[in-house]
Length: 259
Image (cartoon, rainbow, N blue to C red; front, side, top):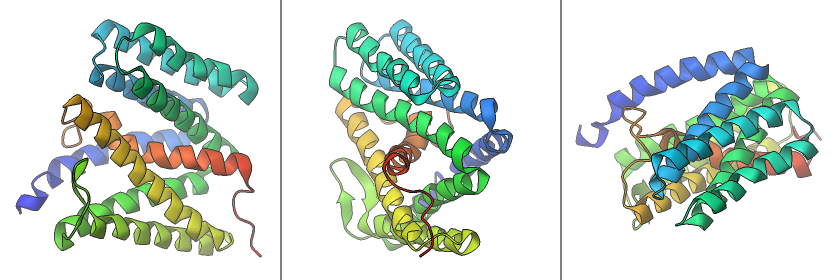
């Protein structure tokens, strides 16, 4: 049972997040955009605090992120981009240490947020549920496979608990989700590959956030979520997947067209 000591708090917190997130996804439009703005703004606040910013500057950067994302939702993409880029620029001016970390991760957070709102707006509920399903299935499969199967560690100096068995199980679970949605929607087989790639990128998001925490000497990004730490801890995987999906949808035809 030791390996699953954190399971019940994780489940309870996850259920609350599912209810709130599910309601926002169903409502869509400005409700979903507002939730994404709050989540991303909180993640920027957590990031700023992790790298040593005082509370006042961290709150200011978080509030600026929320405002930029809400404004970006109402504007054409060309006008939204400079608003989003203004946040890391403000961080460069406001922060004295670890500016590159702040700039890199803030850009990822904001573009992930923009990508999620555009994804739901442009492609609808089914494709948002597919994305959530890929990330969640990868996370759950990785959690249980890693603890039940164990084996070689993926990157022990950065994320001591992550194993290759859990990592590969996450890929398989994501591919399975893609296969199911392919059957439901009639999308091409490319969807399976995209699903696995999103799971890989989600795992990279998790690893990247773990690396920042280890560098800063902190266990969690904050203590907002019992059993999970902070919002950055909970949504680091979605962050990675959303960034890749934003690129895919910008450069390629999506959803994949059946052959």
